[in-house]
Length: 85
Image (tube, rainbow, N blue to C red; front, side, top):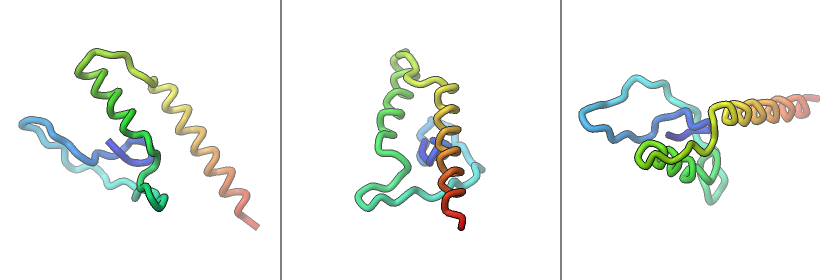
């Protein structure tokens, strides 16, 4: 999983199964020393593995994720309005 909203499949390793035909996502942000949309995707991946393999609790609900995406979209929209003359 990858992309700004974890909406891209960047790697898969599923025995006898291949996911194909997914649309291409937006390119990663460039931060000089770091490329991506956030520097803690590893924690998200670790939680997904813990949930699926070790039956641990989900760290963030879908509702919380949706609220985060909505907030990010509002910030971008507000910044876009401020840039106009």
